[in-house]
Image (cartoon, one colour):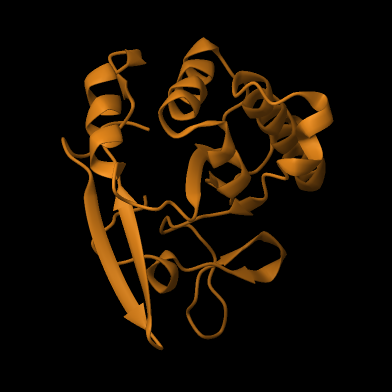
Length: 176
């Protein structure tokens, strides 16, 4: 969520006759506040585009949510509408972490995931009765050099799940 560029950048990759367009947006946070100019630039850029999936990226090793997280979620909701959360995949980076104080990884992941999903639903104005309509699936991601690899050299997250952003996303994006 930190600014990497000043304008949205679209990268495309085509395989088997299907084109995937990924839009990397400027960060929404600048100096500890929502960058309203970035929000407006993103809104204008997306005017004539269809959004099939929103990747909401956060860190697994973040231990608490704060008002800035709430402001980001509200900015997304206000700009793209509450229905965008029906097409959202929550991506938790830094998936190779070792949980604090000897907490079991699965327990830590469950707590962190539920806390984040509850915060998203609350901040986006999704009522408890609507939860079933907003499943918000979660994917784990790790792309650092410390990520374990399998016998084929592919990066492997916990539970031996192969994870390789380069297969999923265009190489012009940097996910570290």
